[in-house]
Length: 498
Image 1: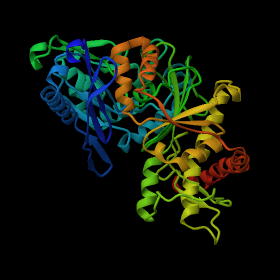
Image 2 (image 1 turned 180 degrees about the vertical axis):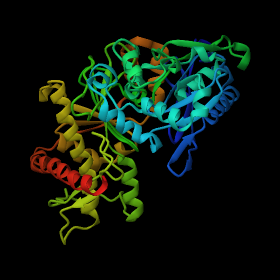
Image 3 (image 1 turned 120 degrees about the vertical axis):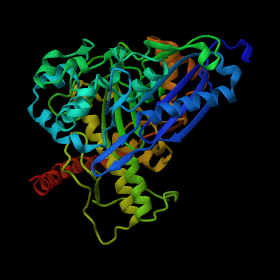
């Protein structure tokens, strides 16, 4: 009953292609959920998004929620945003946008990124960020290529900061970012929770233009109750990166938990309770969630969802068909790195089918595409075990979320390649659930997740077990695949690097 409800929570996810808006009750039930497209603007290599449009979308959704669910909305306790992690925008001292949101697919700063990577020593990865220095590269690029705009920039922030700060009328001097995006800055000492002055000085980046660093559950401001006629002021929280919000929402919060995000970007994530960086091989990014004792190591294996849809559309392939038996692709390997490899960063890679025989048909090419992501995960899982000194029995299962989790053939293939039980999660907006857990439970979100599972808001839909014969079948293929990827990389390096 609404009369017995003490609090509700406004949760927004500011994604690359979608903006999700929601209102949840105090038990984590979703009262309202909507999704709308986010616009990108392309001009040659330029790919930007306009922060003002994200803000307008959030405000529009707040008004819609207030009109559709007035009694629940009046109980709104707090508002939190998750969103894109690998980008940057610049604001002036009036919180006005000087430089728009330039995110990961905007490649104009790549030469700065490569230069920093090639010249940096262990300080950035071992002690500090644990990932690619996107923020540092984009700041250098903006200063060199857009000096007029750079002079006007008071603070460099991210998309969630812009929206949250504008909602509660923050002064530019109170600009912030949350811990989860530090791994993509190249400028911070994550364990200390502060910007690293030595690194900033070495890269000639003005540390005064960097915002303060906040825990995701920190209150950064409020929306006056008179604004939308709520019972009390709505607290605005610092928020968190969308990938990490999704991990938290799926319950990947305990040491040795694994997660497969089968979305547009196919991501393998591992939860650990300490800060361990992949400073030598640079295959994994290490991210601090902002919650004590919850760190993540993750890697983008490929743009798996995009590849999947590309294959279906290009070849008019019916992926709904059921296979009567497992298909042996008979030495056919697909290299999924169309547009470059992400883990480690090797932009010269391209896509390849290798080992084509006369009898191979579309089914073989399709299955080889699915297998390639499993092989990439196997390669990454070996690396996770290596840098964390893990025995094989430390993780026996893996959760899978995202659109690709519905493909049971894919789940079976990955389960057999990794020799892990696949836990197919009930479909919910995991970023939204992660936001709710942070907003209500703060640093005690593990207890919050336990409550959600008891209430069946979060649950496992299906369990996929590895099959002994198929595990044996894939043993030889997965090691061969790793060798093929390394060898083909040398060819593409010669072809594509002047």
